[in-house]
Amino acid sequence: MNIIKPTNSEKEKSIENILSKGLSKPDGLMQFCYKMYQALGFKYIFFDLSQAIIMSVAITVGFYFFYSLSPQRNVYSTLYAVSPLFFITVVFLTEFFERNGSLYELKMTFKYTIQQVIIFRILFYSLISMVICIFISSIIPNKYNFLRAVSITLSALFICALFTIYIMRRFKGQWVHFTSLAVWITAVLLPVLILGERWELLLSQIPIGITTTMAVIGFILYLNEIKKLINMNKREVAYYVGS
Amino acid sequence: MLAVNNVTKKYNDFTVLENINLEFDNGVYGLLAPNGAGKTTLIKMITTLLFPTKGEILWEGTDIRALDDKYRDIIGYLPQEFGYYKNYSPRQFLEYLAALKGIDRHDSKGKITELMELVALEDVVDKKMRKFSGGMIQRVGIAQALLNNPKILILDEPTAGLDPKERVRFRNMISSLSKDRIVILSTHIVSDIETIANQVIMFKDHKLFCNDSPSNICNTLEGKIYETWEIEKIDIPHILLTQRQEGNNTLVRFATDVEYNGEAHKVTPNLEDVFLYVYNDGV
Image (tube, rainbow over all chains, first blue to last red; front, side, top):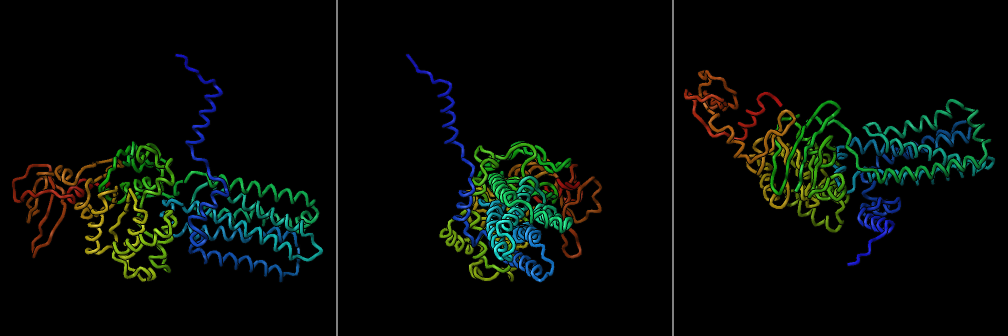
């Protein structure tokens, strides 16, 4: 009997085909968001978080109000320092309440784990923060450049968001929700505090092309980190169990 | 079938469980050991909260970590310390947890009503949980574990906080639930599992000590358990088990490996005797 044997490339193609049908593909960003929204809706994604969200809004508004009363106006460096503030406080506080709540462990055993819910929340907070950045850049006096302001604020936001997610993905431990605060202090607040006028001078003279490029690169890297976080395997709930 | 294959769990150099092999089919399995013996660690590995340092846990032949959400979809878990939201009613709370479990909203409404009746909380289903007793909260916890009609029901110290009447009700409920699912029950309260467990699993020195029916486990002490009103007259090496006061006299139950013919009579061993005998020298 004459059997036609497949060529090596045909074999490779067949293997690829079988694998592509058999293995489940990792979720894309939109697919993940749609799945979470369909299953839980905003009502359950942000369930019992009103306290943390109100506190974050109050801190952010209080900070802006404090700044508006201040006689010294280092506009660009102040924008750089305060633009990620809502994102930082809301991620920190919601994570803090969630991790210290007595339901965290139980919620990690459900079909949709709290780890996945937190990722959706972070994405949503970053969207709100982008709107805040654009808004505060638009209300500065006309003598300042809007494009410069918005690219500086978005750069600061994405630097904070990127490092926060990176550390959350790479490290585990009960302290991990303090990351956002640490990132804000080291990457954003310290240059403002240490360099002072020189930082303001740098931000007001740096070509807008550079700040815009930084914001775009920051945004792309941030989305990339989020995608990695979505498809990261469920991790151990990090604590010692003594009984 | 759920299979625990050669599972070891270590925290740095400290071994909590070593080389554990277990198989679970439908029925009630009681994990019986003192605090610190590794019951909760095993439960946390079965619920995917912790991962084995060595070995694997398989559901129908596939590693539970690989199954991911498909596995979490078939488990129901009541943790040792069950948290809740004080400002919400059981209905609101269970609707939230049902959503996280991926249960359709329409299906969850009917299921919640059914479960609230099962745990006898139908009268308070819309009352805030702020004023609930420990027993009522525990019953809400049992209801949430059953929301997704789990194939594997894992209960860690489920009777803590329940009064005697609730405890009896709970035992009956578990017996009926175990007909078509695996129920894994962790406790150090012997009476909780003596009547309902098909298999009792005990750990000692971080290893599996026994995995057998309660009657077979009790038989291991056959002829070694005695009762006496005059314990001071017992002059052979023995382990004191329990004491019961009756008027001015004390009836003492003890275990001995030596055949004894003095002022004491042999009694049938029960699971509590085995527990006290096995863990006489600690974990």
